[in-house]
Image 1 (cartoon, rainbow, N blue to C red):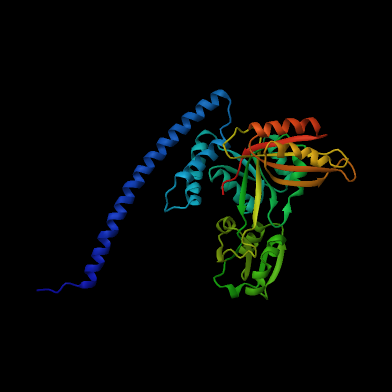
Image 2 (tube, rainbow, N blue to C red; image 1 turned 90 degrees about the vertical axis):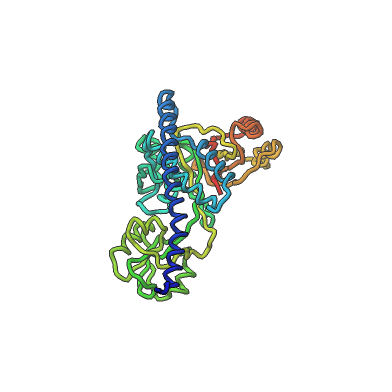
Length: 370
């Protein structure tokens, strides 16, 4: 009688257990595919109805409501970030059945601005790189892009002045916001950290990773370039070179990640605005942004802000910036919690409009998730 191989028995038992789960996954995948196409058919029908009425294909408030509802009902084991990331791509693919959106951003391809476009719109859009912030605004204003994504502020570097200046005169309004964690990686076409003798990156990124570089690559030359994407492009062409950039640059330029998350400040975040031509309805979790001036007299700013306190409207951001109209004159950029149509916000804005020498409502839009 032949002896049974105990090792083979264990392997057969493992394969049997794996097969149960794999068969279940295959069945679930088929069901998910059917439901995804069923969802896409409804989205396509909605697109046809909206096209007949002239409504926009992209509805930021609707997408925000869907993602918030999914996060609220998520029981795991997938994280809310994973769930919303998956459904962002689903909504992006469904929207592309109606219209492929063109979205302008600060290029070239592979920048954190490019990553912000992917975070907000998914992969199924035509991302249009622009050389400057001014060019992004022109693309949106001139119709070369349906939407424009512009950086507003960074948690360590502060406000992006050019964006704020252009918001004072543009006809575009804010449709959404994106909070993007700036996670820096050391990229290279080599396989060993000690083989990197030169590191390319934008000057800000080199500064944000200075402590890590001093500890791990003290002898490497640090070379500032125009963007992290340009750094990745150069590193891909040169032996012994590395680049500090994000994940999207690694995939575009075919580089490996030698070290991940090397930023000295782990909570470094850049905020972006999505600009377009539509007025966005309330989503239930919104912000309102405005810019105003104050009369040149004592207590003038306090008087302008007092209605917000009286109506219980919270300010999440207040920043002054020199106006271009004269010496020592300032504009004040304000972010409020709530939508312009919410009763407390609307009441405060009515009073502000009656007293502020200059007031421009920049937009009401869904607050970024997370």
